[in-house]
Length: 493
Image (cartoon, rainbow, N blue to C red; front, side, top):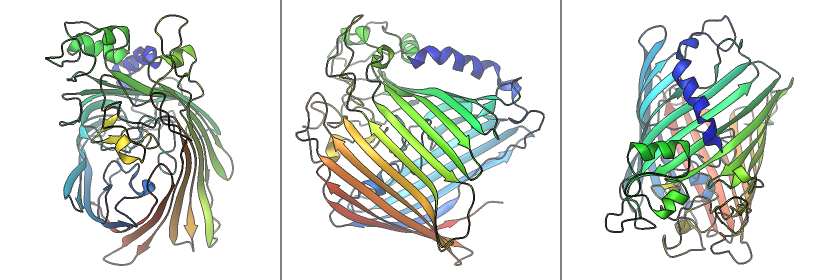
């Protein structure tokens, strides 16, 4: 299991800070730059019914309303200030106001950040992508796709890949360690805590023709209260405290204290999930080719090589050169997400026993599952039961009724008439429900989107954006919808 690699991550976080005053190319002093994102945007949404199409609302950090017609106004402010040659401090806030039948104000970003060389410490909400997968044209990383609001946390780690000392830039890593809190008012649990870490290594310099990547991400829901499979039904307490935090961090079986139930002691403290990731990147004269694979783990079955069929496999090709044609494809992504195996439909503890029925994103104690504000935190193709046509009674059996899926996905990006940037996403899925209750006939679903944007010379330069999306099939209601927006980017410099 990837938790056994955790001491490597902790070692690097503790002892390597002093080694990164240089860039990944040996001998060259780095001038550290911080990207900012300042803009104002107004958007409108509509559809042929009251539902927002899948690819308009999915992987938008939980900020696009599910019910239309709707309007949105958002503003993002972010800036970093140099404190010295190596230290910078920054703050960021993004506010989104959604206006439909229910007005709602969302804060997808609100953070204070302190950076030292290639490292950062931040507190609050910050948009992040985790995992070796495409995060824009693809379906998103399996465990952390950008589909839900960011979880507020305190995090320490690297800002991108940084070189390991004395390797002359040939070995680099990207890692972080964080803890946070889930929202109040969850349907089943309360006071739920969050732990997350990731470690990724790269072999190859920044400009190498061949680069190899590998690593893992690990997420845990733990602590708090629930009414399911607990030792004391009156208190509702799940295992808590520092000793059980250590069990949650390392993912070891067991626990300690008066709140440990049989379920906890024979499984693990908390709900664990994540992926083991591998990738290879090849630079050619005209393109960058990136091939990646994410292997899924939840209850230890992957350690026994069960459920190894499941995972996200992707290929991304980016063109380096533009030839000025009226129509160009500059980037393409092809992905397959498969989660139907789950190590089989049987789960038994003990050596040599089957450890299947992983029941992805569900947990028998934390029945509201791998979610934040009723949005799936991981891949949006494992949706909440409430968003599909195939429903269980709410949380009677778990958060999602559909975690056995096969998805084929294509994403493309390019230019039109050299001034218009366009992109498209097309996904076809076969949905088999779960091992607890299988869907009859594995309903099929197509969800697609085509969008475009262009700059206009108004008020010093603005961007007009639009997209059209459709859901056709048996999993969601048949829906055709659109988004229109105007955006103004600006800088404090």
